[in-house]
Image (cartoon, rainbow, N blue to C red; front, top):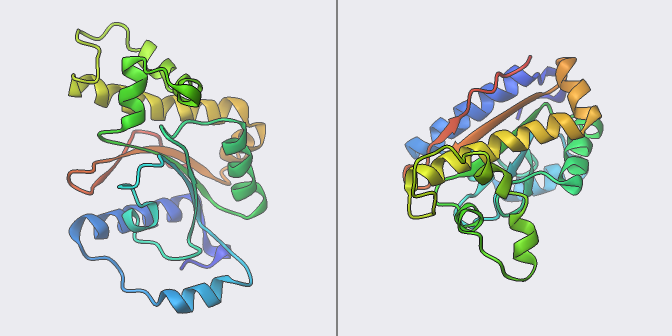
Length: 207
């Protein structure tokens, strides 16, 4: 684990890049989890916070080959941003010292499929309304604009990540100021559940 004093947004981005490469290659680090539990009990110094979907097939710590106490992870179906998520990110970065925010969507996302198809069911309806802006913003894409169109699903998935990043910068003055000041980096990524690879989007790492 990188020492907190040595952590910078660029260094943390590099660690995430290195970790995802090891995971995709099947060369993950062997860790003593019992020892890590004991070491992390007194305090924590996570290097980043990752906003991910609740999908059980997306194990964030594994995907980036990190251990116990290395990452903050916020999860909600469709990896969208709301007040509670923003508060968690502000705590992670402004209070606990994390240097990077990563919003990570994934392929074959059920929440994205449901938002595209306009599913309405209990509280799921309200939840999906947070993803619908990504769907509606792609009105100029060719038909069919349904979950049966894999290309359209992929476009919505990526757009949803980008809109979440926009919302972070718009709705959190704390995180916006930290990014402008070079204290944190903010980026987006897509996890491919078929290959196990993570593709970072074109958000620049700030150092």
